[in-house]
Image (tube, rainbow over the protein chains, first blue to last red):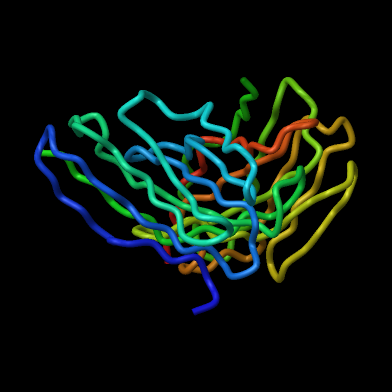
Length: 115
Length: 111
């Protein structure tokens, strides 16, 4: 498809387990972003990638969170030793390039539930 | 960090009525984006604004970039049931690659 895709759409895990979330950006989009959205809240920036440049990790809430991206393709967000407070929808977005003003297009999100 | 104050938090309106919501910031934003999010979906871009004073329409939606560059509003005319959802404003601050989001306006339309 032409849009941003994410998998899985839903993930239920037990506290303490690791989870890995995947994002496939729009083809040709060099910038990729991860956000967290808690129930009834706005979007909280986590991390962005631009090509092969060092990612901006300033939004990651703790060292249990990490993300990788190979070139300009798929990205994975990993949460280690999950906590109940990590329960949220994790949204991925991509844009043509990393620059002020570029429109970001979002995937459908992964709903994470930590029991 | 930069913050956007979006209001109102929620609205209940009658089908056919016009709707207005806005976002304000204490700092300058160079781009404003308005998104709509349906339950279980990611936000969908509605309108993008790039210049102070710019007024842009997309069907029944109209948005404006405030001349002070610290605010933006979104109007929806003649609301219909499918307008139901959460509307987010978002903006890029000067020199920032991070998109800052408002907390959303939840719109309910009564048929």
